[in-house]
Image (cartoon, rainbow, N blue to C red; front, side, top):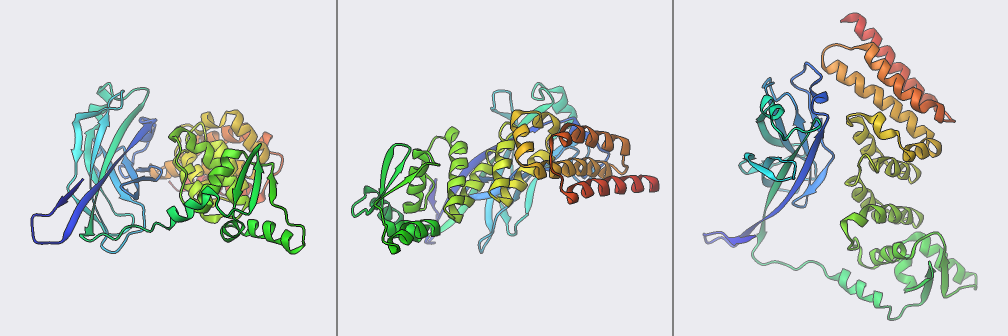
Length: 398
């Protein structure tokens, strides 16, 4: 939406609008603490061309323990001048429709520094939510709609169109190399591939230096549609268009291809896309992928998801986690430590550590997974022992 300001200014103003739904699983479990300052943070998401996350405080903010609080926090690099945005938090019914009586809209906020947050301390009274039909199976969903306001000069310089020009080379005029992938033939330009990938540079030109250059390269470890998507990125530097439900699978395959051909930007884009697809059903596969291809940020996002999961043991009792335990035993040890640390953190926040409870929960986790892990890393075991020792010593002082 674009409107001209009713003054002599030559500035135009427009807004970018997006929304994000956050499902709270295990509502009553989130209340199992005496601390009013306890909060949970959602995974980051993009809206209005910016990165955000939601802060959920089940017992309110600053002692307003009868209310549930929600806040929106900027989780992005800030340009000069900051970010102007207004937002609306809404409680959703079971059909994912906003309830008009539980929709609150903010004023326009100036997010001037990363981490700046704003929201509603008294979004809804807990007793009201608990008595409503909108809390079902101990879960409820809220939606935040974000309006980012941007100012631009009245004389707009069009964006660079070099991507379109380079993309036109995909018509393959002047192509000098062919690739055979999955029964299909793709043609390309050696110079373009070599400029975009050091691996292609070595493969395509080292053979020429040795006098054994070939015009057809066979690739057996990649599907044709994945190679086509990678080729499109090489020429246009843009993410290929696809259906939302296909994005997760394609991002997994492209991440493997990007790692193979040392295309760091494509690899990071795949990590970012996969981060938004982390769920109980996909976290094991994505975590294994992150571990195998050294994707530190993606791995941390998976750990964060499991750390704040209502019941990580239920999530991990799947065939995908069996595979993860076999191929990445060190990851399972890290998860053991994270699981215990989460329980101890919850206990410390509530001003008292229940060592038997924390130890039993960790014991259940370890009993389930440690027999499946063939190789142990000393630091992982040490982290668990240290955490238990800390809990027991602290409990003696309370």
